[in-house]
Image 1 (tube, rainbow, N blue to C red):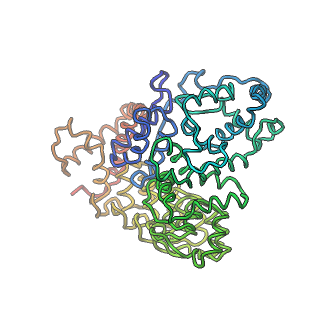
Image 2: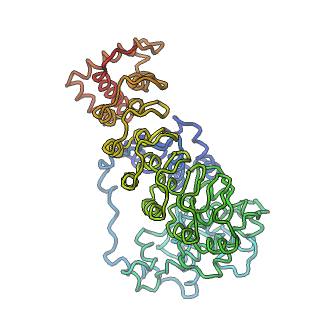
Image 3: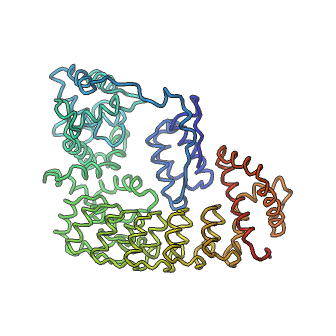
Length: 571
């Protein structure tokens, strides 16, 4: 994906860039539009101005297996005007300036302003005025048992917030922000240089506040029974973010744990309302695994809940959900090292088999959690255990581009040539992931450059088809057989020729059907072009102008490299 920044009002901002790259993604894989639909239904045409939502869509689509090796280029950032590159200078004594602004708050309103600021800085994204109306009502309305009772009237609330908080807060397109990032830092007292000011907020209390707001809201009966917009105004935010707020509390008190414990009852109507929203955000490319409480607690990294469930439910640690994944494996997937350690102490089996991830080591390796990989090895995890989509942990690490984990597994006896899984072998996985450094590390450690496996049958075919020039060169230098036959494209040269480059020549070269003869004639023409150094320089200059041209040139270069290595004619 490619976007070229320009120094004008239409092409110099992040929302435009994200719109452009998402358009390219959806043009190539229209089925990925499903990740954008929930945001579109919520915001309609305004979505193009919502940076947070656009970023969530981008992360969801690029996490889908169909685009797991996406490369996105944002070009010409250095060409923007200097006044757009720098933040306007702040007063020299920033904390005092912020303190003066907040000291103007009337004494009888300070508690309310502090609550408003806690909500603003504690929220994981900017809240809308309507969301703030519900959140602030939940925080300040004592004894409210329903969202209808708790929620404040959003009409005019934006003006009230500005009147109370002064210049410290601003509202843009109905979303509420603090004036500057340094204002947020000033409010969170973990920053020692601001901690002496009386308006500083304790981060732990802020996380507790947001946890209480979200959890109490999600447990209210009318949020389930009444689907009116103002009743469910905080549903999306609460469902998507409560778990992060609670995890960051650290050593929560029993009262808060009791509230969260109720939210983990998977049999309630409340759970079935909020969980789909939560899961769609947390794992957008995974179907609902029908988790039980312990699976979800391990996934979220909630140690206190894990402890309660493990003590109350015998055998819960070994149970799997509908996806075939147990709690220990979910903790490894998410990188929740404290929960991993906790479950190991409770007797979790490091070698228990699962379905998608195979085992805990494969799960941690696939997601790049080096610390957990090391801990599992120390606890006797089988390095070469088979199973799961990647067949073994080594192939999972290679596919994910996690070089340190690849090296760690090699040092602990991983079989670099083990066959099986979606890629066939680790070298094919690394080539498919376009990770030259891992390819070289595998070759250095004895990977079979001509091993069979994968959709294109050989690693050379995979590299050629993808236009990975440097990888093709390394494979050839290490003895890859350019004439090896098999797979959908017969051999590596034809795999390269089958790329988009041939289709781009169809209109201009009178080719109605791609045949081996026309391929050979085209290769001869390309070879003559590449032998002309001046034209090579021109093409190199063109490469930086267009991502489409870049990919075509790479394919051309791959074809030429393969053609020069060819020992026998195309048949």
